[in-house]
Length: 36
Image 1: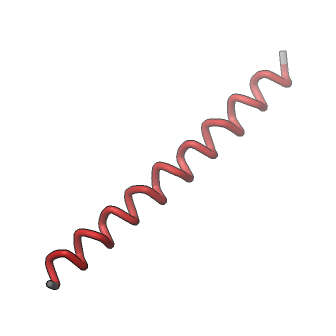
Image 2 (image 1 turned 120 degrees about the horizontal axis):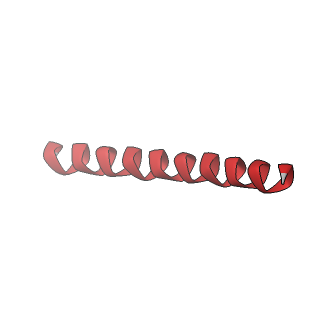
Image 3 (image 1 turned 60 degrees about the vertical axis):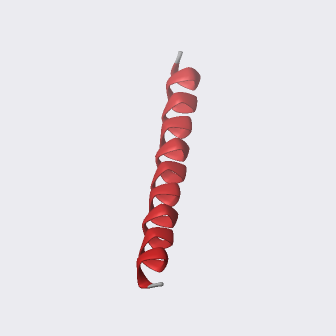
C-alpha cells in the first residue's frame, strides 16, 4: 500500500518536472525565434 503511494508520488513529481522543463524549453525557443 505505502509502496504504491510512494510510486504515485514519484511518478507525479516526474511528470510535473517534465512539464515545467518542456515549458521552459518552449519559452526559450520562442525567445530565440523572436530574436532572429
